[in-house]
Image (cartoon, rainbow, N blue to C red; front, side, top):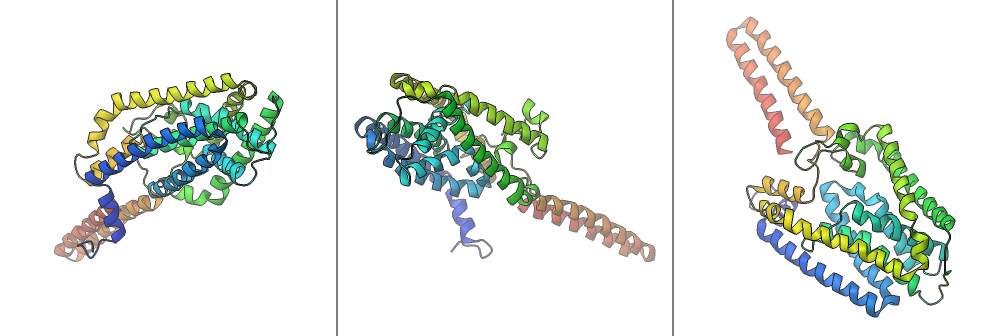
Length: 369
């Protein structure tokens, strides 16, 4: 089926998906769906705010499923246990299982209106309609805030909410639920899958992303100062995240009590998101997008990763061991050739050539991987 008996159908399909016509079609579809999605969300909030919870479910489940599939292929699947994804899972639990559980609603309101919404500014989320990755990132951070806005000001039948909440309640529920997630994250990355992460540096996590060189290979001050595999770096990362969360929770009681302040707050954040998108189209897109269709398949793939602002891929431990083994075999073969040369010069020369051939083959295999 692929025209090559040594090529798998899966690899053939993957190569076809990265060809320029398919990439263009995919981006056009993403642009259309992004515009339609924003229009549908606007309609739901203005006309059916009490039903927005089901619109949220209809949007977020397909987006999370697509992100799981795409990030698994890129070996980025450990991103999916970051706090923003767990907050969305908590919102899904609220909508699908406990829509009238007041403490859960308050905790979700705190996280959605605080850390998640402000992350749009912190991480410069951009409303870039043609990019499925960027539009998904925007929706993951923006939709929970809209869900809780509608839940707070247009609550579903049977849900009774107080007119105000104290700063203590916000911090207590917000920090406790955040702490539960942080404990889960450490358990997953430092216990359950610690060996897999240690053996394969190509597996990407948030802390590895932040301490990796940029897409152009340059190291920032942050990447020079911190090593993602040291506990000192991990503890600093945890402390900074906790501090950010606590600061982001401070305005939440005011947002809960004042409709117009809450509305202006969200509008300001979403305008920043639109501004980031316009800056991306004008300053980055016009140059970077064309690179996706230039050169061979490897060059196009590198350009596509650069569009995601991804750090260069790290080699896995298996590939590093393969490289070292190739070097050792090369040295050993050379020594054997020299010994053979003691018995006869022709044998030594042949043995030496064979060792270099073996080393070259190992290097070629590594490049092929």
